[in-house]
Length: 317
Image (cartoon, rainbow, N blue to C red):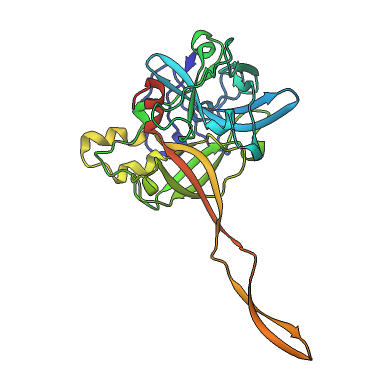
C-alpha cells in the first residue's frame, strides 16, 4: 500500500518537510499539479477519507469514514450507527460496507470499489467497539486487512501522532475546525474526493460535555457526514505552541474527533395560550390551554474525542 504524508500545503504558507518520494499538492481548486505524463495529482488529505456505502439487499445508506493506522494495522473509523442501529423506529443492520478507493496515485479519477463484510462466518461483527462504553460510544474501528495487504490502494491514514497533545493549550473554544465528508452523498464524483465544511468549536475543549466523551462543533453539516474527521488546521497551531522546539509541529494536521450526530432541535418548555370558550347562556369563559411543544434549532454537531480511537483498537479501558 502506498502512503502519502498527512500534510496539506493549502493550510500553511511555510514549506513542510516530507520524504523525497512524496508529493505535496496544495488542496486549492485554483492550483492543480500535473505529473510528467500530464495526469492530475492530489494532496494527501483527500486520500485520508472514503465514501462509505452500507448495504443489505436492495437498501443502501451513505456515510463517511477515515483511515487510521495503529500497531501495524489499518482501520476504517466511522460511527457505530452507520453499521448498526437498534432502535425499533430506525432499525438498520447492513451486512456489507463499500469503499470507493483510489488505485492510481498518478490518476485520481481511477478508482475501485472494495466490499468489506460487516460480519464473519459465525455471524459476529467484525468492527471493534470501546471496551467500556460499548455501543454508547458512537465510534467503531473496522480492520482493513485488504488495504494493509494490497499495494494497489492509495490511502493516507491518520495516526496517534495527529492527536492534540493535552499538555499544550493548542485548542480553544471558538477555534476554527475543518470537517471532511460527503454531505447528502454529494462530492467530486469524477475525482473521488470529499468536500470540506468549516465550523467552530462550540464547547470548552477538552472537557467531557455533560460527562460524556464528546465536544460540540457549530457547523452546517448534513446526513452523509457521519464518521467525518474533525480537524484543526495546522496553520493555527503556530499561534499556540509554547517553545521553539515545538514550532516544527506547526505544519501538522490535528485530528480532534469523529463527527457523529447533528443536534438540530431542542424541546422548548410548554407554552400556553388563552382560549375563549362559549358558555351557555351567551357567555364566555377564558382558559389556558397548552400549545403544542415547539423545537428550537441548535445547529450543533456532537463529536467524539479522537483519543478513544486508540482505546477502541487496543481494547483498552
